[in-house]
Figure (cartoon, rainbow, N blue to C red):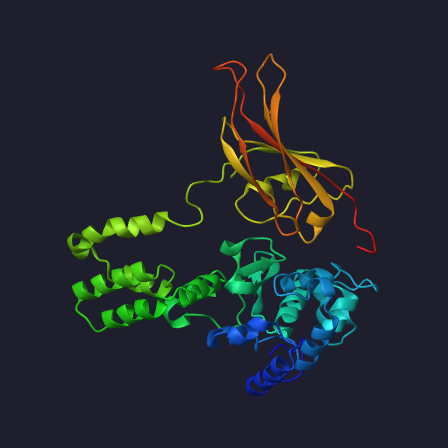
Length: 396
């Protein structure tokens, strides 16, 4: 229970009964009926009251009242570090005139990252969608479960690698993973493991290893990992028994494990812009955030067209450019990507790709090959991100 949101502790059994009645009344999204038991800790554990959740079902904007975008309902909250009386959000409930931070009050008063993320998480939970606020360095984001078990970050500033679960939220695999279970990224990994169809077999091998001699245990754990690579518990147990003495026995299986580690969505590409030099038309000090490997943002306040230029430091073949917009700015902006190449004498040549602006991170595949006017005298290839955007108004 968090006293900032409601008075008494949550009666989880009573809340579950409410959700069952809401499901029968078809007030929840259809996927609620397919949730597993472990999902319910991230639905029933909402920090808001049952009355707030009912209010959310009635008041979420129509554009967000869909399973694939419900997490974006966090964008309904106005970002305000001070209320209309000048009280700082850091003064706790004084920001809300010493009233509870209910859902309608958060929508009316606004707030900063914490209010935004907690509002969005509760909107998800109101429709039976697992969600939770998560901590990031100096920030509060949220995660939510989209259709098909796809977990998403919203109001994000640090990416999955810098997202941590709050103390008052129940962990997944806490006994097996220890402190590592605090990572929010454990949740989508657990989702993939359980949905894989091989998780039960993998767990059988892992549990059998606990009753077996060391060498047999190692073999069983390798099998468990190969059956279900997302079973983090099997990886933890395997690392615990993988002593140097077992190296000769493990060696024949190393190739399979290395092939497993090399597969995944990152296969066949790498991030060329990571930690490269950046120039910008405005907010120069924060421009480096776009290449620091996190989701920290570059956010110039000027309304005029702005641009970024990233020096890749060498001629490169680029086949994808990804831009992640903050909030719904992808709907308000247009984006153009230019590949610029020139040498000391000739005018530059360029290849151009127009990226469609879609809130949440437009991605367009393109192909840009590095070319040089004079062999051996080319300067580094550069990419310029430029877009036009209007300044937000009171109606946005």
